Image 1 (spheres, rainbow, N blue to C red):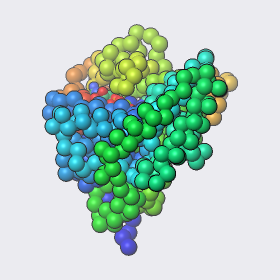
Image 2: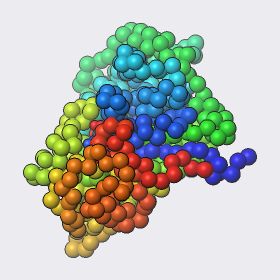
Image 3: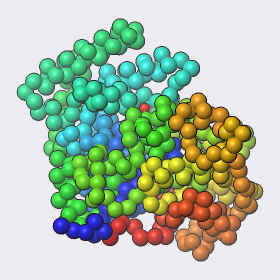
Image 4: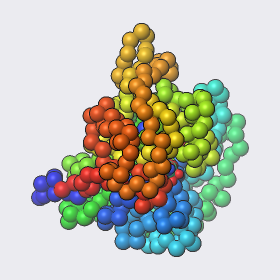
Length: 434
Ligand code: GDP
Ligand code: IMO
Ligand code: MG
């Protein structure tokens, strides 16, 4: 039995509302990893990774895939659209990326066409309370999982799989046609598609927990990759404007099937400002020219849906909440270069709420939307930092900005990033635990 400090495990999660650059940071640390494992979410995630001038996009394939020696696993906590998975692998292969080291948990739930249909129909009936989901069927698939009528990859091996799927198509068609007045999905088409797509990946199916337990105890370097961000967590995010899974590192052991004591270190990826796609409270949102300018500088448009992302100043109250509920050990600051042009930069240090200043996210989103930010203002650095390769090379005002975030959030800074490419990534602390 090893002492926990001897396990080489690292978790990378988003610490805001998603799109913090987790894909890029996972790809960077994956250079030192033996395994990269996704533990939650589905193809609602969208990660852009640049390496050697080439752009790659992944949604369900783990972001370690660009590193040929790394074993990539989609854990049981994920929900998988098999058609999307196969097409994403094909695109990667066509771009010269080897996908032979990609595996999937036998316990992962499968997203079917009826789940996607219901996701879209539910959004329609939400009228003026729309969540703004990605319409990838994520919520309805996790709902099926909790209702125990979901189908997992291992179920495809059952002799009565066809009947099991038929039952589910009939049940979901009842919902689609009677509750939502939608158009029924066709069983024969869904069944054939499911079988075809399953055949293409069936040799990649493994018992993820067992595989990982051996790997971790053999001191392999294992990186667990989150999707979305702490503030979109089903329990701790700004409910109901959240995703349908637990996005924090606390869900790693459940989402991959290992003991939670095998997890060593958690890096929260944090943008140097805040963004959010979809509905829900965001006290620092900028609905002015500054917001528009930062959106253009940061190319802040959703990589899956193309929606403009909502822009705001860095919210240290929300970050403290993420650190507390998400168990973040260090922060990795991304997109720092997007602030290069700013004369002054604001950080939110408290919320005005009912004639007081508060320092947490409220449970009720309705109340949270009443919070307005208390800011402190720091001078910008007005310098192009995209070629910076070390802490020492950063302009003093950029160092001060990062140090102030660290101080306000009482957390060490793991590193920072000054552009989208793998090379524009600067690590400052130990990487994996141990
Ligand atoms: P993820 O979902 O957390 O992986 O993030 P996304 O890929 O959805 O969004 C992050 C975007 O920022 C991507 O387009 C990245 O290429 C880009 N990006 C990541 N780090 C940096 C950085 O340090 N500077 C700039 N300018 N862009 C970055
Ligand atoms: P990555 O991994 C940003 C948001 C959606 C919506 C809410 C629920 O790229 O950071 P869902 O389709 O999950 O039911 O949508 O969550 N959302 C994301 N926002 N980045 C993501 O993933 C997201 N995944 C879901 O916009 O508000
Ligand atoms: Mg994204």
